[in-house]
Image 1 (tube, rainbow, N blue to C red):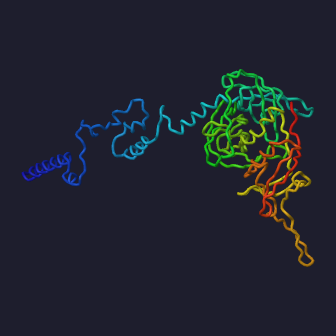
Image 2: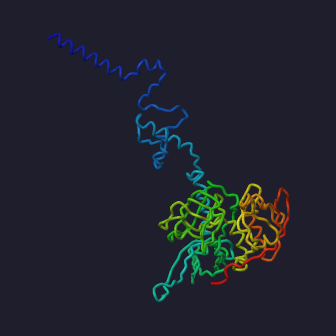
Length: 424
């Protein structure tokens, strides 16, 4: 019996010593250089360093307060990840640099975006009964005279066109001019100049895949909606009507939905670089593939649309070219056209005889390489079209080409055809 009591006492003493040892700092930890936790209530941070848990404002987001309500080693990785947020370059107002650009672009341009609504009729049924139709689209104010740029398909066939500005005022619009082949149209409203905020016209010739873009429009009637994305590709072709295609189209992944057509595509400086015109979708809603007409086309045609109401197209008679590093290689000439008539050369046909057999081959490298027009260097097809369309039918242009390693200047008298007639 005494032995059992003695064993119980010894066991109790040893247990107490073990508990006390667990509460004290182990000597082997001190030898390893580890720091003991501070006494309860003592400051855990050196002088001059603030405790983010204790000093964070109560209304700060949970992650910005370094997850102050979480304690214990299980939340160590969370604290490490949140600590990286302190390196984010927040500016005034708590915005990141990217958010500041988004906000600045929208603030600068949203007043330039107009909401366009249309009314018309279409024939339907066995007896061709006229059925009223309504449409909606977007546009950009381009000057303080009330001109608004949009897509031709937004207003095509409309009997009434109305424009709502950013201040909510509604104006009846009149048709000014259109170019159906490039899906561009201009309308005009009689509004006070102080209520009109023109968009800044940019340049689409230096665009690159990956550049950030901004689209503002009125999808589903939701006025001045901003979507963002990047340029997904350049130099796409887009079929508009009558088997005609627009070249140099910009492909974007910013959301474009019904009602966004005609709205501005902007760069990071808020400058107009394109007109949003179409989407690739089986459902009629955005699938991340949108298309915009580059502003270089608009800039080239806009003066004619405002002054004449139509585009008078000079024709040089070059059906197709290949763009190379040195210039534009002529691939096909229009038979009997101005270029062929005045001496420009396309690929030459080589005839070879081998006994009774005759073979023909096309020597593409024998074609003229266009390097300039009227003394200006030409590098892209858009440069070439801009130079040609700066003239009128019947005028003469001087084409500088490389032929057989030599430079030649060949004058060509332009032909041409007129675009869509003025009026609706």
